[in-house]
Amino acid sequence: MTQGMQGTGDKRYWWRTASCRLEAREARKSLETPGPPPTGFTLLPWLLLGMGAFSNLFQAGTQQPVLGGIGLFAFNSLYIYVVFRAFVKQTRQARSTRVALVLMGLITCALALGYGGNWLYFFPLLGLATGAVTRGPWLGRTGLALTALAAAVASYRDGWDAVNVAYATFLSTMVTAAILSLSEAVRELRAAREELARRAVEEERLRFSRDLHDLLGHTMSVIVVKSEAARRLARRDLDAALAQITDIESVGRQALTEIREAVSGYREGSLGTELDRARSVLEAAGVVPVVRHSGPPPAARTEALLGWVVREAVTNVVRHGREVTRCEISVEAEVERVRVRVLDDGTGDADGDGCGTPEGATFEGTGLRGLAERLAVAGGRLTAGTAGARGGFVVTAELPVGVDAGDGEAAVVAPGDSVRSAGPSSEMAAAPTAP
Image 1: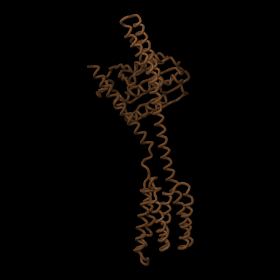
Image 2 (image 1 turned 90 degrees about the vertical axis):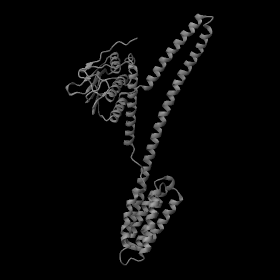
Image 3 (image 1 turned 135 degrees about the vertical axis):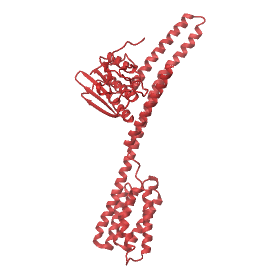
Image 4 (image 1 turned 180 degrees about the horizontal axis):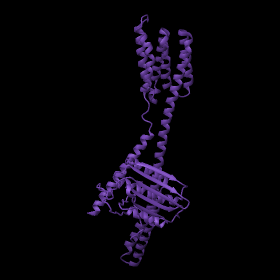
């Protein structure tokens, strides 16, 4: 019964941890994603430049107002059509889009020559549409040609006012093209970076799968061959069969050792990586992380051991913390020792049942005990308990700056198996491991 409840609790924990990681990943993606790509709606407000021409239609003395209204409606329709097709590469390069742009140019010239005045400012609008559609080496030539056309028409109608019209046309064409091209390039670079990261992860998984396949393939083949030999020899030569069985045991033990080494090397992480992961998990769980890191970087083995401490302590906060709103993680490296301290401001929930921790109760878990054993072998120590009168739970680990590669290997820690201690902060003594 107890084992069944423990299995159910483990499943709930792993499900909660997976949910936290997924939420953290989505949060990071939302922070990195610059929002939806721009659309034609971003260029629609510029149609307000045509309000002056629209008001001229209702003024006395305007010739052919109906014809001007038809031209205004046609220009606006073509403008909307072009700018909405300009943000998709396939539709931007389509022949229909370029034909619509040419028709816009003809209508703009006709209205500017026929009415002048405010109607000349349809040229900057034409420049906006041209800059949104035209990209690449033809942009400069197209922008200069359109500017020259605007200057010629404006000078014919209004003389020196042509300078303002030509400048506005050139500026709207080039700036629009530059901004949209830069935005598109940034999105393409981000997509390429994500694709490279995804391929790197896939290649690493394939590499690890190949390593395990090579490792297990040879071992299992040897075991199968020797098992068949032992079966054949069992009836007529028992000693020879026992020798084969002894070889099978030796090969199996060696395979277990190699698998542990492969997996350990694959999963080994640094303290910096664990701090980043801790920050993500805490943020996903609604806890404000405060990370402080001071002093020179310790040895690689010391970093790996302290990374386990950070992982277990943060898992402890997420799994058993009650009413936790803030978690402080401090790393202080001195000349001879490195200290890691993980402190939260929760009320504690040692047994994970959501009912809180009885005052004075003490709970011991294999996670913190295993960490204490592992740090003790490496010459360090681990303390854990309530953080005094102000409440909260604190885990403190100390290690020498340099730890030999063989230190810390005596104890094996099961990730996520730690529980909280509601009693006073006390040192976790290293307990002998059962054979």
